[in-house]
Length: 149
Image (tube, rainbow, N blue to C red; front, side, top):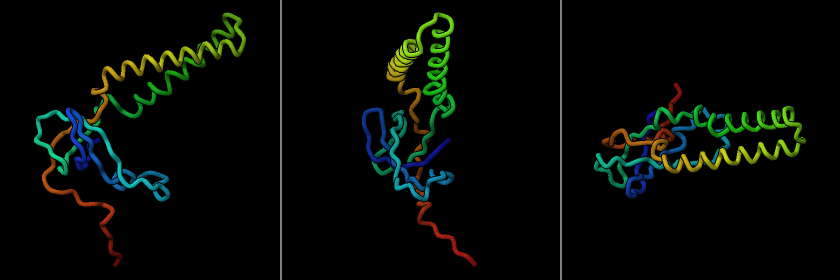
């Protein structure tokens, strides 16, 4: 999904962009009670655009970094490891409940440690990247009023 945001800070190969939360909260169920006004996102700077603070840019997240695949990595695989290991250690090897659960929990901890090391080495693959620099300004959606007839 492509989004448009304003450049707030420029670092070596990273750009911090800021966008109005009202533009991304349209279908959120708790948008009426939420007090988030802006959202800041780190974006890769490919250095092929002449970008300065205050510019508007269009960015998108990598297609392989979808919410579904990241959720499976963070929640699905660990719960399968935890359940499968706990049940198999209890049934096949006769370990006690607490011992099998403890071994499974340590194994899930090792899984998260490996995932952390992997994600730090390949962090740039999962970060959003700039598609193009947008000329002009983007209207603030929250300031638009609709007149009833």
